[in-house]
Length: 378
Image (cartoon, rainbow, N blue to C red; front, side, top):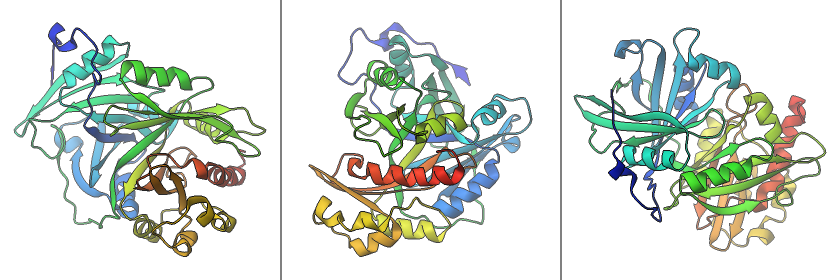
């Protein structure tokens, strides 16, 4: 790996409308206690396909990583190989969780220069990594909590994932479940920190605010939270940011912060073209979802108007529906996928709607509260 020098010409002399063009999410890296077993889980339960592996056999001495993919969604699962490592310290504090949200760019040096110039804290200097398949340039900055953004430039690379990884082609390869791409990733931050991180994504990364929800929008009889949704210029990368709000009892955001040990990614929303088929497949493979009372569906037709799906088909699966001015969406949320009540997944199908299910907030958060009550953390 070779560190690259940034020239003044690459920083530019003036701000552009979109000074940080992003092609999309490149990969999401999770630090987990057992990467091999986690890989098996995401293969079996979520239908991810094996892609690449790095570890002792590829010259790594401190970690092992498995790369899985389903359509445009790429997960990297990483575990330490011995004690006293930064990965182990991350796991000790946070448990299994997202460490890296990698963003696909055309110029990783420029992405680093532009964001650092605007106040980002450097995580990884622009570095060229190469093997017989070509080269990749990566750089990175710190975001909220211990999460980092890595910029990945891979135009001149034809390898399986990154230099240092070899193809992973086990005999066990379950079929996919129809997951297509990352729709958005939601972060939880501490009290009164939401606006600070909104400003970070706006000023440092050039994102724009799509929508804002306050405690009147997102509240139940017991708990509340506030949220703002930030999106990059072309809309391919969206980061809603949540913070707690005052309520009678401990909110899901406070529970997350307590168990995760600080801010971090709360859930990953992944898109499908047929949510009914996807959810049926996931349930058959053992994925558990939050459930809402049957009463939710009694007035669904009045609230959302005509939809293509039969409500009697959505009801037993617990799929939620919401409409905005441009169409409607269908969504459902898993229970946490790790021991701590932290990271979970959202399955979403958009039929024109660009919103985030505001009409479902009350039903969703009441469902989360029922789980909190069972855990004794409400």
